[in-house]
Amino acid sequence: GLPVRIEDPKCVAKTFPDYFEAFFGVAQASRPTPVICIDGPTASGKGTIAGLVAERLGFALLDSGALYRITGLAASRAGIALTEDNAPAIAELIRRSRIGFTPDQRVLLDGEDISLAIRTEDASMNASRVAVFPAVREALLQVQRDFRRLPGLVGDGRDMGTVIFPDAPLKVYLTATAECRAERRYKQLISKGLSANMADLLADLQARDARDMNRAAAPLKPAEDALHLDNSEGTIEQAVQQILTWWEQRQPFAPRA
Image 1 (cartoon, rainbow, N blue to C red):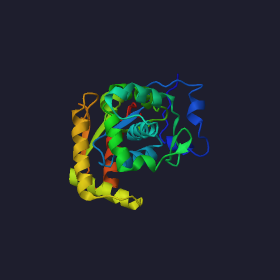
Image 2 (tube, rainbow, N blue to C red; image 1 turned 90 degrees about the vertical axis):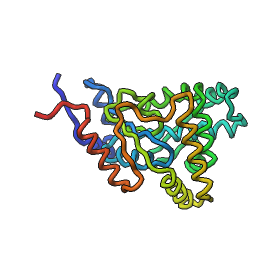
Image 3 (cartoon, rainbow, N blue to C red; image 1 turned 60 degrees about the vertical axis):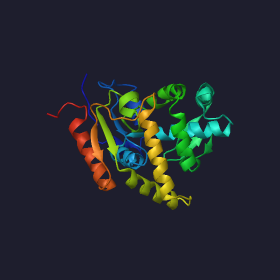
Image 4 (cartoon, one colour; image 1 turned 60 degrees about the horizontal axis):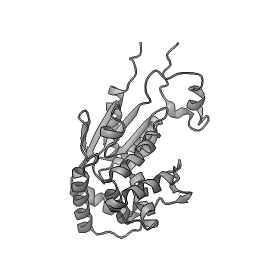
């Protein structure tokens, strides 16, 4: 058949949002749906940068951290203690839950908007706790992979490139110093009207880094073929542009004639 390359997939977002479903009803993709993985520690800027990259490319967005926050919140609301013994019950609870992400970036759990509820520091710490349970990670594995759809996906998290999408053509490991990340989290919480303490935030970040890096199930680490990007000093736009440049160099299409 005749090969076709769509250079600006986001151009159909408003006028024909179901374009790719319709197009691939009569055509066949010659390559897997492209994925850009952005991994790194908490508060390194992954979510903001991944969202902007996805917007520029017209790709879908997966905030894997939100899934673990949702899991921790759902378990807490159900009165299930976040312990290893309760991991099977937590996994079953999240399998039964209806999780949704709206175009305006709201997060829904069984129809309820929990966007603010999952952004507290308690929700962040609970996400880190449930993320160490293999049963919970297994339950969320297919949920995350189901986000892979045309025209492409940008996924941010801690094991996007190592576990969820190991075949992704571009993997980025985004870092920043703990002090820089604590300051960013402080400003983020204050801007949302939530209380915060810098010393506590720094201690919590360092504790979470240790848990994420040393957990037995899918520890936080860069994929062997990941490109490293330190986001301590640069601007968000500089980081976005760097990732877009890497994507242009690596995107899995044959060169144009």
